[in-house]
Image (cartoon, rainbow, N blue to C red; front, side, top):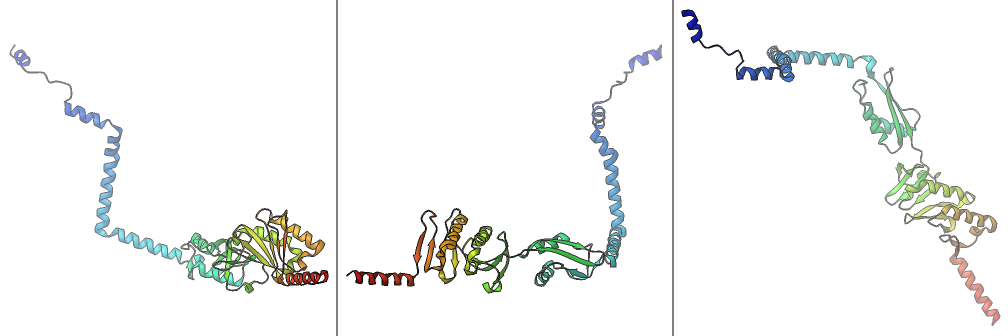
Length: 295
């Protein structure tokens, strides 16, 4: 009876968890928290322990030194050593320019060589259109370059340049006579119209021995300059057709062999001639004689 009274007077313990324990349980059930506790904390502890050991016994320095020695042994192997540079298929002058632009000190290791950097430096040369660089197993650095071929001499406002068929500069020269075998174009903007200039020179082939060059006027049109200071002024639009007409007149009447200073074709419907001073003087003399006879 006494035991029953004691049990009745003792309060029962609540089986529900406390509020703090409930919240901690909810937090633990989150996947992110469990991953941090199960993997993050052990990983962090391992990193800290490794760092402490490396700092205490200088393991980091030993590993770095070992890796450096291994790198040097591999890089310095004879099979990876470049001892020569070859530039096949180009002129001797360009080959020397390419060797200088490559900026490779021999002997060099093919494992440490920046092939793309070498190629970019070579392609920066005016005379090189594109290049290919590769290290051969024989210890030779082979540089294959496509050389730009100059087709005209351009007397530009700031100098004399050799340009290719696309108007890209190949080289700069100090005199037009450096390449007397190439036709001459002059005037601002002429270098940007090389294909048209070549087409005009091809049409003027019947008088090619007399052609001195083409002059770009106002970056709009061309003047064909011949010997004896003759000038054929071509129109802005369709200069090829106008020059073909001039060549037809030359074939039929040899108009360019006469005392003509300027043949103006800027208006193809109304070609105009301007005689030389000598021809004008002779014409005035004949007029004077005729006037005297009539009197």
